[in-house]
Length: 150
Image 1 (tube, one colour):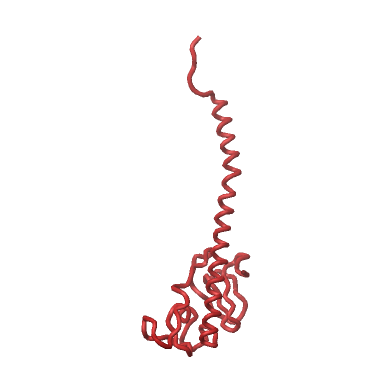
Image 2 (cartoon, helix red, strand yellow; image 1 turned 90 degrees about the vertical axis):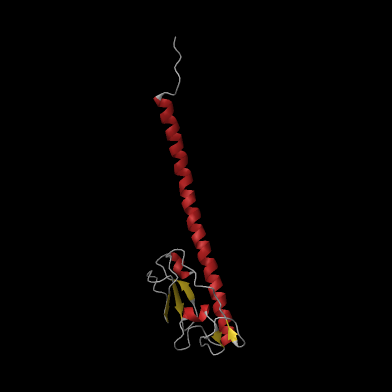
């Protein structure tokens, strides 16, 4: 009798079915890990920016972006005098504060570093990455997910 080498069609189908079942179990766990990483990044970025807003408020006795002609981003990423005006020098000098952030972080869900400023609640409309309330100093994500309220 002649010995046959190789696998039968049934054996190959069984292996394919087993691999499919394993893939169906493992793949969703990778997508959950990715989402959890984004949430963790968002929480870290919010904590960093909020703490820098508080430092600015402590050093200037005012919230960032309340001086006419100085935006929130300019106040957080540039050198400012005690009265909140932008400095003309690019290096630290006596009487200057900041920068509080190297650059605005990107919202990991919307991939935008743009900051909308207003006096109400965040619109949660993805029009920008972040929302800054210039009256209260609240800084939030501005995306249409549940993460906007963090």
